[in-house]
Length: 95
Image 1 (cartoon, rainbow, N blue to C red):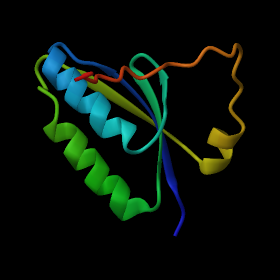
Image 2 (cartoon, rainbow, N blue to C red):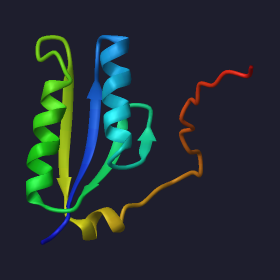
Image 3 (cartoon, one colour):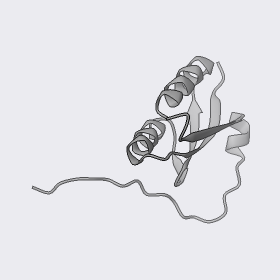
């Protein structure tokens, strides 16, 4: 089966929903901008389940998520200017 690739951009109104969505997306690909992930899924069935879960995490009246489907080849040929990367915040406690 062929991989399914998306660029996922979002605008989520609520901090908790935004954090939940970012955590979910981070399991499928890298965060490339503050509200943008590049997601690679192994097959179409996984993509369907991914989209269903994504829809369940948002409030359709207050939030918006955009998925731009790319071929794996197009994702591999992306052009990136600049080397800045987004560092994920890591919360920890020192006891």
